[in-house]
Structure formats: C-alpha cells, structure tokens
Amino acid sequence: MAVLRRLTQAKRSTTERSALAGEAAAEAAEAALRAEPVPAADPDTGTDREAGAAPAAPSPGKAAKAPKAPTENHTPEPGDPHAAAFFDCDNTILRGAAIFYLGVGLYRRGFLTHRDIARFAWQQAWFRLHGAEDPEHISDAQHTALGIVAGKPTADLEAICEEIFEEVVADKIWPGTRALVQMHLDAGQRVWLVTAAPLEVARIIARRLGMTGALGTVAEARDGRYTGRLVGDLLHGPAKAAAVGALARRERLDLDRCAAYSDSANDIPMLSLVGHPYVVNPDGALRRHARAQGWRVRDFRTGRKAARVGLPAAAALGVAAGATAAGVALYRRRRRRA
Image (cartoon, rainbow, N blue to C red; front, side, top):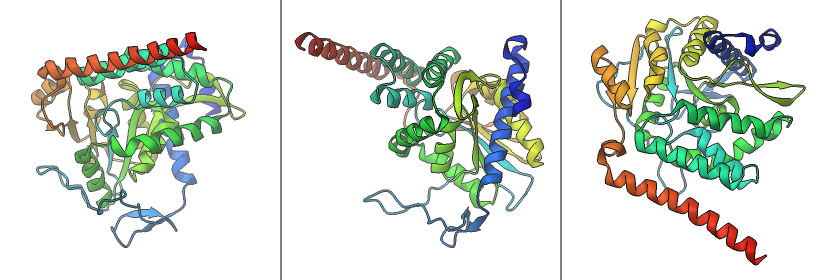
C-alpha cells in the first residue's frame, strides 16, 4: 500500500486512477482474507464459517428458512478452486444505495447538516425512481463523507458503520439475490461484494451475508487516521473491473469460470470479464445490453420499475420531499421558540 500511496492522483488519468483504485481494493481484500481464522465446516449448512463461530441466528419471530435460487441459473461447479462470484451492492443486493444509508446514519449522529441530509434524500429518491445510480450523486455523497472523516481515527468510522448497517441491512436485502449468494457459497466458492461504497461499509454488508469478503472504495489513511483522500478513485465502473481482475490474479481465479451480478450499465466492464454474467434488477441500458449479448436477467422487484409506473413513483418522491421539508420546518420552529 505504501507504493500505491506514493502515486500522486493529480498526475494520473482517469484510467490510471481506476486501476489504482482496483489494485488498492484487491490488496485490502486479500489482506483481510489472510487475517481471518481458518474456516471450519458448519454441520448445519455444509458451508464454511469461521472456526468457533456460531451459525447465524434467524430473525426474531421467524423460522429459519433457506432461500431458493431462481431456476435456470448456471450450476456452480462444487469445490472449484478457480471459480468465484462477484456481486454488486446497490439495487443488486441492497434496496437503495449503501452510501445514502451511511449518510442518514451520520446525520443522526450529528455529523451532517439538514442541508446535507435533504440533498441525500433527493438523491436516494432519484435512485429509487430511475432504478439506476447517478455517478455524480455517488461521488458527491462519497466526498462529503471524506470531508467529514478527514483527520479522524479509522477505528471511529468502523464502529459507526457497524452501528448503522447492523440496523439497516437486514431489512434491505433482496431475498432473491441473497439466494444466489447462498448458491455459490453452498458450492464452496468464494463470494465477493464489489461496490463503490467505502470499504468499511462493504465489509460489514459482506459479513452480514456470510460472503468471503468485499472490494470497496479505499480511503487513504496514515498513522491510523484518514487523510480525506481516496487511494486512486471511487470503485465505480471500470475501477470495479480493475478490482475484480486484480483479485483474480492474486487468487488465481479463472474468470471464464466466474460469475458476476449487477443492476447497472456502469458495471458492464465487470460483467464482461466473467464467463457467467448475470443482470439483476437492471436499469434500462443494462437490460438492452443484456438482451443484445444474451445475458441472463433476474428481476426481483415486485412490479415494474417505478419510473415506468409514474404515479406511485411521483407520490413516493413527493412524500420524501414533503418529509424533508416538514423536518426542516419543524427544526426552524423549535429554534424560534428556543
């Protein structure tokens, strides 16, 4: 990592920054994997888990029920050491965008202003309305977060992320995608989360799902404190493909035997790397590309995209905007009374 940090971002092209971000994510993922205890077989599920760890507990009040993968999936080769699966996060595994949930959690803890959270609410509503991420929105949220944590101990953000996502993740997972994750785990494959969200967030979500690990955006840190800069760039678009390629080289994976899953046309570079690309809850551009390429499509949403429905989407957007406005008005009223 020290070598990577010596490479000055300002002097590098977008392609070089993407490659740097991918290498940093792969290096961090491999380091985390080496630091983990040797996995032991879980007698209840037949899958690997940490030695000495207890099986995951079912949700309160609900009987444990293994999710079932959709039909017509390719069948992973059991025990293939050169195969793995890579899952995008936002709208593929998680309803909505992880960085926006982080923003709400930071707001509730006093790290963000009302203006910040109003902007985040609009961006999240836009994401849910269009069923696609806006790179500018993701970048805006990410750099806001970087500004907040600059100079702070890395352990502090890790603890805050743990609190936020333990509260959020369980209710935001697409059951269908969760079943696909489990299908690969049951085959003995390594399964990786690949996301533009901060690595600290990505690891928590991956751990919650029993995945092998995570590839996420790496924030630069020195002497245990964040510098307020990224290593390379956001792990987005081509940077995700760079991270998957870098990890495959490190782990000696055969990408033709690997699978990848995403909802966004931004991830076409990552999907194109593997022999088994899957399209999950796709945006319009990715759906069209998938049809042209003959890629398999899985849509776990209960209805058609909100953007196609129109009125319900507009109503939801109005509610979000109204709630934000009401919150700001209430805050101002309380300040006048104080």
